[in-house]
Image (tube, rainbow, N blue to C red; front, side, top):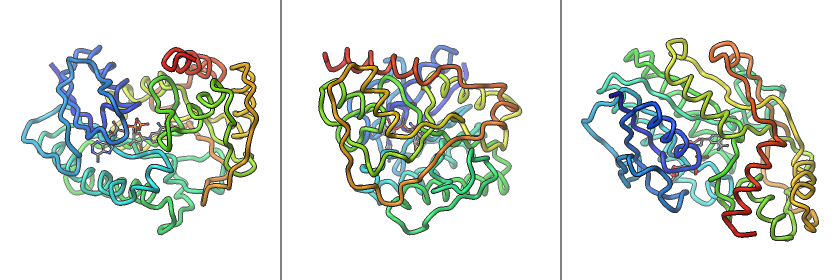
Length: 310
Ligand SMILES: NC(=O)c1ccc[n+]([C@@H]2O[C@H](COP(=O)([O-])OP(=O)(O)OC[C@H]3O[C@@H](n4cnc5c(N)ncnc54)[C@H](O)[C@@H]3O)[C@@H](O)[C@H]2O)c1
């Protein structure tokens, strides 16, 4: 039976990955400190270790090691800069050591934020980024960039089989909607379902590209398990852009909400535009996003409506 260790496996993306690994007959171990996910949301077959990844070590060998533990929500990481950095420096190093000792395939979920405020759109993987090394978001984007450097050092020095993916705004059921953990889609849906003001930072002309979670899992599983994935860095996202303002309007319409849009102060160093160039993922993984924003929003609205009884 193949084995996989997933850090941050109890989170939004990790929980889907656990399910896919179990479905494929894997023995699944998760290390997670429950810092950004509240209740246990992995199936009971998973071996669950509650621990910060920066304090985790084991002599157990795994066929696959995937490092997802991180604090990806902007308000949350801005409020917890050192914990955010720790999962990406010591945490990444610990997971790499486990992979090195076990001769595992290692995968890292980096982020589209490594591109900062990009000057070219859609963004290809060979764009080096436009990032402020000491700005308010640097605890996240620079530590993700550092992780990538560390991972490539393991590849060059130890010939470890490493694979780096850069997800672009993934959404779907199970993503947190509350407080400063709530990312834009679940936050807008939650506000709309309660007929509360929809809070848009700045003028809302900033764009994002959204990927539905089932498309993310399909791409991730392929990337992890195919030979051609070795040593690659891939954008896993969508090439279609939508402005945050248009997203708010679409969610109001879909939920038949009475909510009004209110504009808050712009977020400091918020990237103005974001869309993924997925030429490489198409070629290497033979993958393409299948779920449209329209469809994905319907599933997410339905889930939140049921969860919150709204
Ligand atoms: N969802 C997205 O749109 C997106 C986009 C880009 C990158 N990513 C990356 O994908 C990964 C998963 O993101 P997600 O959306 O599932 O977030 P999430 O917050 O739902 O999950 C992260 C998980 O990691 C755990 N965690 C955080 N810090 C930890 C630590 N120090 N030690 C152990 N566990 C820790 C949390 O408790 C949580 O269960 C992250 O690395 C994130 O940076 C996600």
